[in-house]
Amino acid sequence: MYPIYMALAIIPVVFIGWIISNKAHNSEPGGMLILLFILGCLSCIPALIGEEFFMYVFGEEPKEFIVLFIYIFFGIAFIEEVVKWFCCYFVGFNNKAFDKAYDMIIYAVFAALGFAFLEDLLYIFTSEGALAVAIMRAIISIPAHACFSIIMGYFLGLVRYYANIKDRYKEVLYTLLSILIPSLIHAIFDTLLMAGNALCIFLFFAFTITINIVCFTNAHKLYKRNIDV
Image (cartoon, rainbow, N blue to C red; front, side, top):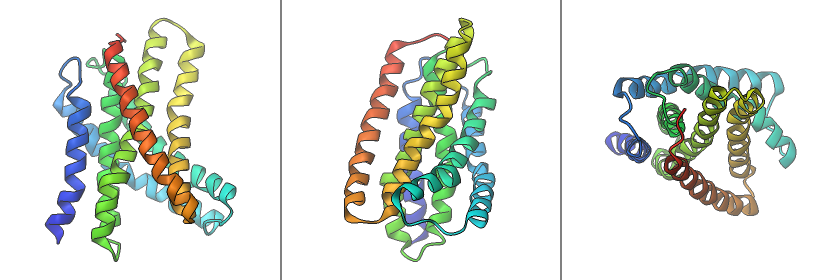
């Protein structure tokens, strides 16, 4: 079964990476994209440490929906999005290859795919229903991580644009949004899934389909706008 598990982890990563990078206005450095992917994998380690520490300090997951959302936002979503943000910001933001706003979506997604890939393997090989977990993560969780990072890359691309035209207010605003909005969407995604009741599961699938459509559509729109940074 291990080859099947690996295929289910690798195929969506390769497919999404190809879709996103295939739209690059100029060919992005392969070495940098590989580095972003590797750093994304490695960023799982501080994220897991941060999440374990948060759970140790604050105890078990709460049952009330609003409290669960707050718990997940700070204890899971924010931590994971911050470590991915650092990867794409410090590797890609000041790189000379970053000359279009859309490029940052590519960088953020490659970091996210690295994170999602290693997280995927950890879930698969520590779960009893490994095949079901592998399938669900291939069609839901890996694309979701890519969506969160499309949002992140979208705002970071605009950060570079506004930094170049010396609009300090929008530069700071979009920097904050590049972390907070992906964290918010990530927290909603996880909360609906983890709440576990029938209504939340229905809303989870509706929300998942919606964010995939919105994120990939807006990524394409940013590509078409061809904004120089």
